[in-house]
Length: 119
Length: 119
DNA sequence: ATTTAATATTAGAATGTTCTAATCATATAT
DNA sequence: ATATATGATTAGAACATTCTAATATTAAAT
Image (cartoon, each protein chain N blue to C red):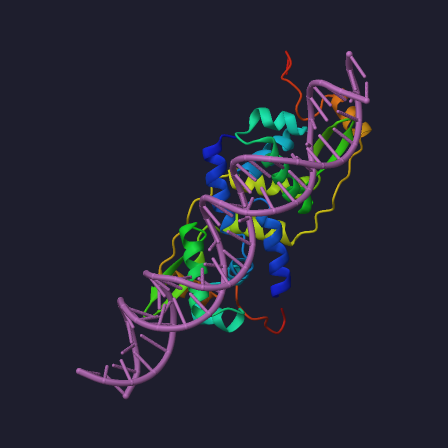
């Protein structure tokens, strides 16, 4: 992966990397919400929520539709957002490998094996 | 989602949120690598790579098996790591909703609808 | 026109992350 | 024992993010 691409992807994942933003996304995942709805639920000020929404909007994770004075926020890339939230909420047991296991994987030809004639 | 949980999950996702760390994970995903292998590939110093590996280890995304002077690093939560990397590399078209669409979703009973007798 | 409600913006302080330079630790080879 | 190779650690500077306080904007209600 080249560095520019890595940089872009890191920017995207950074948008998820804050507790308040995760909570906003979990809330929006359930349905459209305006800022005051979120103020009632989250332990954060209006200004702060608005700032985090700006971060999420810049990352194109959310957008809003205006309804009079209200802004109805929604998740604008649901597959991505739900995918990440689901991964974060799932249990992921830690695997441990010994040097011997790694050696055996290599002998068998692991994930890094070279392409070979005939496939 | 309560705040402690959100905080924990944010800590986890933060471990992904750096270009160099994404590149390390992409590399380890292909197979076990030692630090010098990575130095050859990444535009970063040995010290810096080692520091990023510490972050990844603390998040339990990677671990290593010692082989003499070498440390063979590997991905220790492959489902999680591959899940996130796959989501980041996939294309996720942005959806746009108008106020009217949102109204119609609500009328139909959207994701936030209440539980109702009889299920 | 004024007031109220909803939300955004801005400046700067507080805090957190990352990088660089120097140094250390450990294993193997000589 | 010394040298070499691999990798980690530490301190602090550089940089980025987040929060707080003050203020602005916009739409609706009076």
